[in-house]
Every structure is written in C-alpha cells, then in structure tokens.
Image 1 (tube, protein in one colour):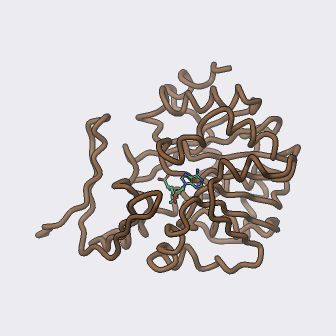
Image 2: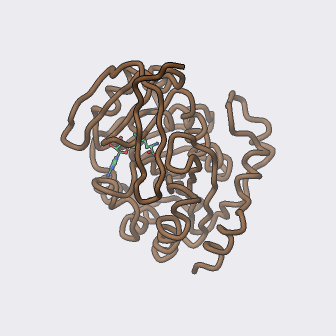
Length: 286
Ligand code: SAM
C-alpha cells in the first residue's frame, strides 16, 4: 500500500511507538484544558487524539469501554447509581446504560469540548446521551467528589487521561479517600490504570498502595488488549472497602440482555487471572 501520511504517538520512555495510516485531519482545536484532534484513518475509522495521545478509535474502543464497565457492573450486586469521572467521549457511558439496573448516571467531565466533538465524530458512542437517566456535569471530578454526599454512589468509574495535568489528582490517596466516603456500603470503584507491561511496577503498584492507604483494602487489576495504547495492553483496577473485586455474579453475566463485542462471562473470569509478574508485583502489597 502506498501510505504517505501517518499519525505516530511515540512512547519515548519505553522506546516504542504506534502509527495509524491517516486520510485526513477532520478537526483540531485548543481548549483551556488540552488540544483535541480528530483524524479519519485509513483502516481504524475516526480517531480522537488529546495532547498528542491516542484516546479513542472506532475500531478498537469496544475493548476498553466494555472492560471499564461490565466487570464492575456484574461485581456490584445491584448497581443503580453510577458516576463517571472523565469519559468525555461517552463510550463508557454508552456501556453503563446497557444495564437495566442502572437508574442514574452522572458524568463529570472537565472539558465539555471533548463531549461536543465526540457527539459529532463518534455518534455511535453518544447515541444514548439523551437517555433520561443521564446527567452531564462539566467540571473537575476531584472537586465534584469532594462535594458529593457520603454513601451515595454504587459504582464510581474513573475514565481519565494519563496521570498528568488535570488527571494527576485522580491517582492519589486524597482522591481515593473521597471516593471511599461517597461509595455506598457495597460500593465499588474502577479506574483506568495504564499498561500492565510498562506500568505494573510504577503507576499500577503506586495505585494499589494509594488505594489501600485510603481504606480501599480490596484492590485488583484486570488486564485487557487495547492496540492503540502504549504496549497494546491496558488495564483497569477495581477497588472497594468490602466487596471482593474477584467475585462477580457469573449467572447475571451469562444472562446479560445486551450485545457486547469483547466482554462475556468467560472473558471476565480470564481477566481476573494475574500473569506471574503481576502476581509477584501486586499481590503482596498492603
Ligand atoms: N480512554 C481514554 C484513555 O485511557 O486514554 C480516556 C478517555 S476520556 C477522553 C478522558 C477524559 O478525562 C478527557 O476527556 C479529560 O478531559 C478528562 N479528565 C481529565 N482530568 C479530569 C478531571 N480532573 N475531572 C474530570 N475529567 C477529567
């Protein structure tokens, strides 16, 4: 193929990069928070890039969005009230809305422009944004959580950018203490937690330590494939005070009433297994 234009994200610290063939730049803007670019790719549909980092492609976003949501939603016994911090592209929101038990979803995204741009260029992710169960708040998730009522949320999903800039404060024990305060008795949180290959001994280990120090004593990381993110292998981390993130309602998962493309009960079970290096790196942390 005569491919002349490529978008490349370089992960210099890990000596790697990933490129997608580009047909054209569809949109570019600088917001008060970040630079947003949308590309039409040759083989991966539309692509969202924030500050030069891959966020979402049409072709592979289902992997991330399904794993950020369904394992946690089938772990909580009856998830009714869900809060998403970040998640401006609305892919996570669209998966949460598939669960009939969910009565209310609040999405707290700092940058309204990400959502408005997603509505235009990723219409299938935003198709249910008008669902009456959804409330959009455009503001800082850290401040929002500080003001939220105690014991009021069943599931908190942190679908943020990398732990730099406005997302840095979403990865420390002060934030997790607030999360613990707002979670209900059976409450659970799930956080995007970077690459198992690149970050088990740095960001993921630190995340476990900070969550546990905040009182979220049950912590487990689930790896899953994600081609456009660094190393092509990504993770989410579930945490709670009491609920064991490794026990889920398999029967409910097997009888799910909606279509997924990656998630099913067997994938859930498999994602709970730690490869040896993750077991060594994470299991003994207290
Ligand atoms: N799937 C993506 C990933 O892992 O790279 C993340 C998707 S979503 C686009 C991330 C969103 O988090 C961005 O739109 C960003 O504006 C938002 N965000 C970052 N920090 C935030 C904060 N403190 N409060 C609320 N939203 C935040």
